[in-house]
Image (cartoon, rainbow over all chains, first blue to last red):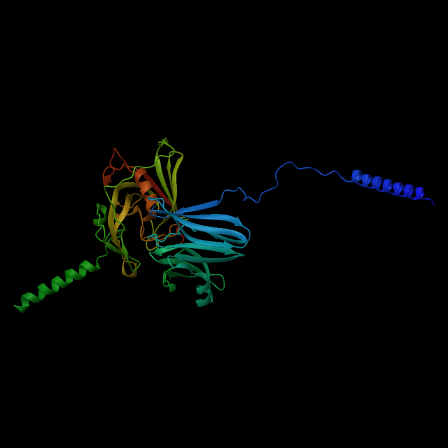
Length: 195
Length: 222
């Protein structure tokens, strides 16, 4: 084989390679060229879910702000003074999905010193009071102290610092009512049932 | 001497005993059944409810904020009527077919709220209310926005009324000694709307200016 033959073989090889590459490129799916700018990680433009309940004397409003966050839902509770308009965050909690917080209608104590809130999770209902010192649980201490009764509802304030707690007996019939005394956290069984 | 004194002494004791034995007619909100029908402002006074001492909120007669008219002047026409549903513990007020307001209330727990058709006969900006016995004794100064009503066999003097309540926040549940308790903001709104039109701090109805009719019905969840 002469020198020219080698050159010819290399030329043929290079041409086959070039054609092959050209064929591959042409047969590849054409890609869309997106002229729009890449998506930015901006927050979802969604109005926060707000619920408000006024105090019975009209001097304040409690607002619940509900926002979706990565791990569930973030609840922020703040009061608004009806005269000055000043807002004050009183409680914040992030709960997992399926857990909800709400403001009962009679949330404010008569002197607006305390508020109570309701938490529901998988059929379990808990109530707690917000004081200047923080959150005071009602349901768990009650269950510990009265294992034969089931706390069914906290309806409102029977006095300046007395919450009305209603119960059922273990057989499902109506149980007695109690005062829950804030800020001491004690329960007082009542002779009358508060319906 | 002793012969003269002993009969006198026995007679005096008998009269005192008789006074206690004669049962007083029920009066919803007053020991005297007179006291609470007059304007009485006692700022700084303490009261009693459910065995608890309570400081009554102050009443400022000079301060009266003009009602906010976000939607303009009221245009409803027709008869004003207040309905109190004991079963649901709610109040609704209409002028003609137009709903004016709806609110949670607390009606009689320790004494029933009467049912039937009534009329407001007096409106008082605030007064003191006392009544009940033993553990149920209450003595409450500065009870605001009081609207006394009578009718359906209930004399005006029995002292039943719609009024604001500052000593509890358990509306939607029976909590009173026969009256209709309302949140102060709701009582104020109703007081300003209900007839007779407010004229000063004590307003009496008359033939020319009758009180708004009230219908109370249902059965309280006791």
